[in-house]
Length: 506
Ligand SMILES: Cc1cc2nc3c(=O)[nH]c(=O)nc-3n(C[C@H](O)[C@H](O)[C@H](O)COP(=O)(O)OP(=O)(O)OC[C@H]3O[C@@H](n4cnc5c(N)ncnc54)[C@H](O)[C@@H]3O)c2cc1C
Image (cartoon, rainbow, N blue to C red; front, side, top):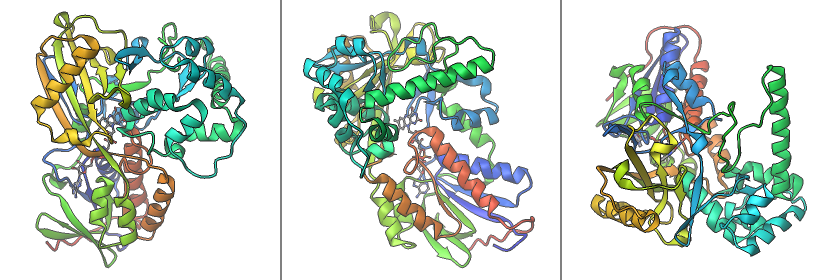
């Protein structure tokens, strides 16, 4: 691209990462930068995994229901979009999560932090672990420091410290709840970097976690003192009730109108003429000083390309550009999942246990991976008198479920809810959503792979890869990467605005 010309960027994929990139380019344009973009999306709607509807007075999330509050990129973007007043915190006063053990719900013990038990009495009393595991958890305090030589699976790390039962009843269900993944495959360095560091420094993860916690509390106390605030306890960890902690920040944040509200607000800021729905990009080629994009039966030239599709799609698109890059992208595993929302008349449902819901270890032999009591997790997103249960199925170990028809899936979930919670009531409404190969899995060796990918991308000017495959699976990280890619491209543009350098040849 020559000095003084408009930089034309193709964004491939209209999930949250691609939308965030488009928003950033739009912002740069409004500020006077000479940029244009085309957003290509293969589906007939934008948002990717973010999708929700309001049915029977309840916000029903088909994909993600919230984002982690401690990662600010998502809430910041919501505020920029004017949605600040619609951000809603999770109802942490009712936060309690159960694990299904031999078909009984056992609450996660208080004091559990990142899979690490830190409180003696709740750990000693819990029915979650056998006596043998509890003894092992006590002896874990004696582990000597162990510098990390190479990456290993989360299961290997957790088993070394707390034994196989902790993998089965804790690591595996918690991680399959977040990643749809398998603790035996996921990379400890990528998924639990803090634990890997603690093992190197302290040996015992429990001692490491306690030290980190007391440092954090001292810092919070200091900050509170400096700000003239009362110095009470900080946010409860693990499964604590959170009661009596008025300054605590909620763990999760969502939007009053659901994730669709986020997508709609973002899309409203974009130029509709530059969005191409139902237009998959089929291939990318490097051309003189830019990129050729093959889509919709034609080809078009761009100065830059932000690939915001899943890595497996990026692999296909880039196969003719850089075979090694394409191979690494194609080797990133993905899991698929199914969510089923069931809306009930609360009066007919019967008593549910307190809390947000439960997780199901693979050893229970169930189809469900988890179930959220949606009306408890976010208040005011469900009309009083209604209850919403959201079941998750699928994951790395049960991909075959995706081919089952909706009625079979709903019947399976209802049978399991009956066996676990005794629910016999008919739901007023049911909704099934399938997410094929939507969640990247950070497998052992992920960091080496992403380093190789970054090195190849750096050698291809104007190319950026964003999305959940690289540096964070959640919505905030996808937004962060999308915006950063757009900012970097704008910053790399020679100064001064002018006529478009783009040439449409298709
Ligand atoms: C069921 C579920 C629950 C989740 N829960 C949470 C949660 O509670 N909190 C959280 O933070 N995260 C959650 N996640 C993860 C988070 O939603 C995703 O990681 C994130 O939305 C991914 O965004 P993305 O833009 O990278 O990819 P996607 O949303 O997958 O978007 C990629 C887009 O690219 C398009 N595309 C693909 N190929 C092409 C092509 N060749 N040409 C044009 N377009 C193409 C696709 O159609 C898609 O729209 C959840 C995910 C799922 C599936």
